[in-house]
Image (cartoon, rainbow over all chains, first blue to last red; front, side):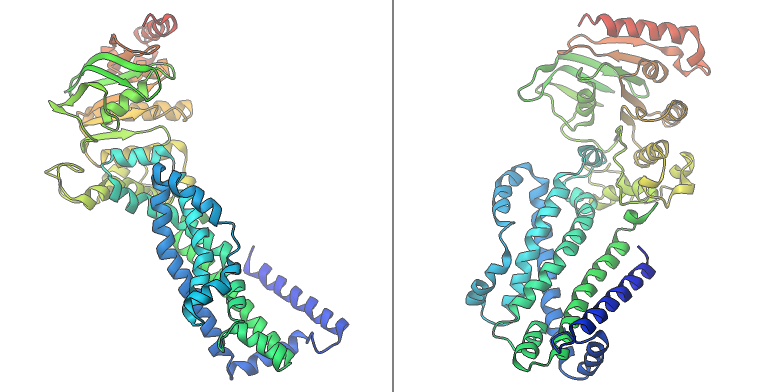
Amino acid sequence: MTRRDIGIASLGLLALWQLLAMLVARPILPTPVQVLGTFIEELQGDLPAHFMASLWRVVAGMLLSVITAVPAGLIIGSSRRLNRLFSPIIYLLYPVPKVVFVPIVMLFLGIGDLAKIVLIFLILFFQIVVLVRDQAAGLPSQLLQSLRSLGAGRRALFQFVYLPASLPAILTALRQSVGTAVAVLYVAELFATRLGLGYYIYYNGSTLLDYPAMYAGVLAMSLLGLGLYFSVDWLERRLCPWKFVQ
Amino acid sequence: MIQLDSLTFSYPNSQTLFKDFTWKIRQGESWAILGSSGCGKTTLLYLLAGLLQPAGGSVAIDGVPLARPRPRTGLILQDYGLLPWATVRENAELGLKVRNFYGADGVHSPHDYTPTRDVYPWLERLGISEIAAKYPAQISGGQRQRAGIARTLALSPDLLLMDEPFASLDALTREDLQNLTRELCAEGNITLVLVTHNIEEAAAMGENILVLGEPPNQRTRTFANPAVQRPGYRGSTAYLRLCRELRLELAHDPA
């Protein structure tokens, strides 16, 4: 998949949108040209502030989950006993749809940024713990034995084996859950806040009935998800060059 | 010198692999441990490496009982144990990095160790300096094993333990690496203990051959193979005779 392929696919999708808008021919589905115009206009207005608020919540949630879930996954995955203790717990909690915690988290943490960050953290935390744990538990014992025979104790094994081995798992987990995180952020931003793309989309769509602006918000939220997705890809290329060699 | 004294070992809930097993290896000797799968040959190697502890008896190297891996022992396994995310050079540096991480504490690295990361001479000696920037997935099995050997020799071991190191290589590469390993051990006066299930490999690598049979192994059955250093030994009648003897020994297995 090259940049050219992605460019062509984007143009194709825009063309499809244009076609649909022309067929529907109602204000609830403006054309991409209209929406792009509004988007550029809105960039002079409040949109950037909403975008930054959402971006901050997602990125903070991601960072928080990485710095807590990676050590947890590594410790559980590298010890058979801890793995036996924690795996059933993770097994039960992992499939619970975290979006249902939106009202609960808000009851406990209020309506500020913290509640939204914690929600994103909850989604990503389990994804990362599971993938990092499996990665650590699945390291070939030959690899570990040969490192031990070179003199490596537990600390050196963590630094030279477990940590670098978990990097691809972290990035995979982030890639898989960035979409969910943005979706849950949208839901969380519908409640009791005046800042964030979720609020912006909802407010323009259902209160102001300004459809082009609503779509501009949807576009911004899509760009947020895409941008994060691309960033993870970029990080993977930078941090795991060995995965991309022939 | 390595001394095993009435060593006993078994894995939990499994039969005894070694019982009152006594064996002696002198510095600079090369040994091949020959046996079919399940005879305990890899276990014996791990006991020598200090990665396993005997249930009874003792393993001592230079008079010191072995309680954990010893910095001057190098272990090389069949699937090389290379880090897939590190280049050949980084992999070769790994042993030194681990040493630098702990410093010269006498436990993880020898007391007289001076930190270094210079593996280039070893990459040259093993003929892999040109692929130093490649990842393990990009190179051949033989080159990977060369990287594994470079990594171990960079630590200047006095004892080299190898577990089926050439089993997954094609015949020519295997012979090349067997010869190279013998040369390197001779150059550095390194004691070599190589585990194999392959009779020809045992006969081509070991000045002495220890044959393990159906466990529990109690008696030390050894074959002397002093001519192994002679060039062209592989084609000689002595070599073929020894292979035949070893085959017979494995086949009827009186142990």
